[in-house]
Image (cartoon, rainbow, N blue to C red; front, side, top):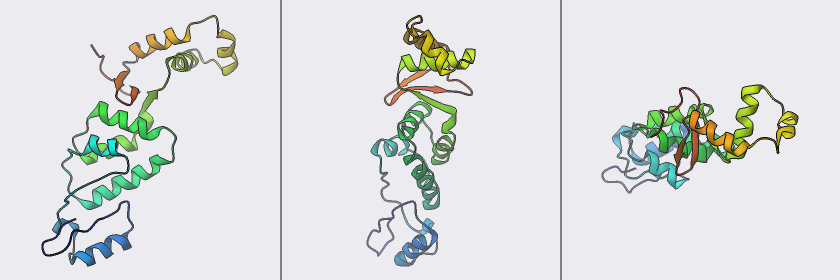
Length: 173
């Protein structure tokens, strides 16, 4: 953060009210709108690059976003899923990036085609793991997975294949 006549101040988010108030007192401002955001960095570099072009300049909004992002760290693979979502959806605002983060259950990052074929067959026919195990060797789950990805309009991102559940992505040509 930058305020004329003061040294730049680094603000680490997410932050509680006490910390935010201490930063405002240090900068001798009443609201963060009186300061300029000079630079924004995220713990995960690719996340920052995927939302860097947003039009947000409100510290409180960045704090809300950082708080929501912190919850994603604890979930295995969710940061990569979120990076894939950002690349696919290309949010133009921080608010939209936050909405996508809060709606990650609507997306599935596909790690392997074989497993995806098994999962989709289970969903479609209501099969349990034992039934899928018995079908192994009789069915080409990988080829079925490729067919399902095409029908599900799965898209390829730098961070892996991504399926949007509702509504599905538009068919790629």
